[in-house]
Length: 375
Image (cartoon, rainbow, N blue to C red; front, side, top):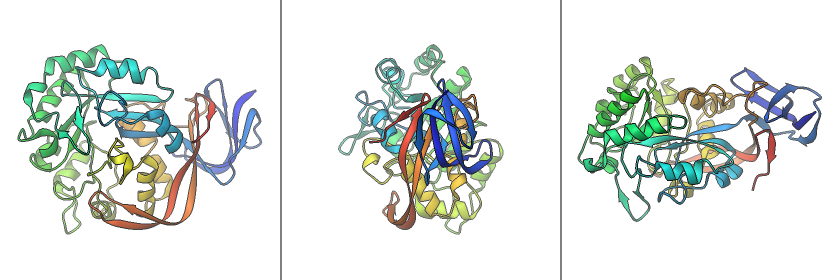
């Protein structure tokens, strides 16, 4: 007997090339079957709604209570339809143990972290206080970072480093070089944040290796990946060619409509759509992953591709092919979405507005093969 059956929804699973109205069943915490006329103990009519693999947000900050920028993953999962939160380096070697014990291991939703190179992690990030954790090189202890990464190898996805004038002060590209040394020592990828110069986009991108992630990849000028004439910069194209991954990481200051239009017109899609949700951006303009996905829909990216970039795209980036799919026998997770039609106002990080005709909303999630009610 199936535990939960979602009936009559439009099932979209890019990992299997599925896009049709049908049923999906869950049993024993796993996906049991996709097909017509399925039955189960808890059958739910999701006609008119979308059913997709559990959404994966590749860039979030969910060390709630332990860092100033952390938001609560559970409440965001209920309201925003995400089943896997990738924490982008909220905690560093000095406080990762607290993140693990008090948040990650107690969370009903999956949290997978990057370890921040800086000892205290992102420790001073708010509307009123902003101190970059890579601005003081005394906070960057490579041996400590490597030790904590090794001791938590079952969880740590890679090394996160934030470079740029805001995060790194006058240190330029040096924190990235240090992060790459730790990552090489531990056999891990790097996720690199880039804000305003210094360093330059060229200095950062040219250092990244296959499997490393450049987040905030569609940021507005300066350090934008596209020229004012619409041409994608040569170093960006070369980085993609050698296997560097590009993640949106919307956040409060890292996503521009003009940049995105230029990149999409050039045929350059990101590898993952993510929100960079934290205590500031959750109030706008990012809000959550579904809002960021909706912006891409309204900029002309088709629905199946938007879902792909929020499921199997991030799953591939973190080397977890078991996630982001509805294959029978796989993890029993799904996001149920509603695609609203109407007139919606979206804004990017520099105040440009976009009038869109579509908006994705959460209508519930399946976690561990059980239905979760939305708030």
